[in-house]
Image 1: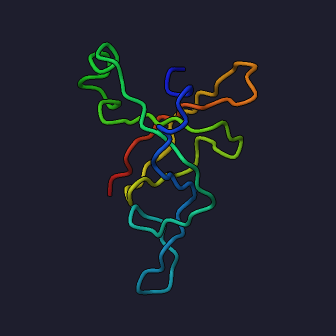
Image 2: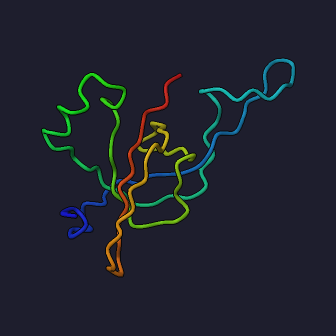
Image 3: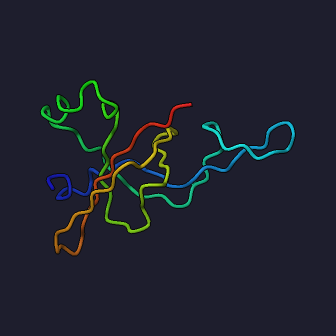
Length: 116
């Protein structure tokens, strides 16, 4: 991976966690898009730029606005987690681990913005 050879490009902080349901007026816990994000852990990440061919391949599909980030390999990251970058909440939809035997490996995560 080209980006993996330059760790200084891991220049954004990404937080992983889940949502905590809010209580409605009747005291009932309601899990909705505006629930509170509760951070479990955070890592450094870098934005992975898509190639022109990748952009054309997803144009007009549900994956059009997905972003890809690179992180150092971490087994605590899994698809059901939420992620936050710059106060914007995303859902992890894909984790592509680096299968190389290198002692320092990286994962590519595909994130989809959570809409209300």
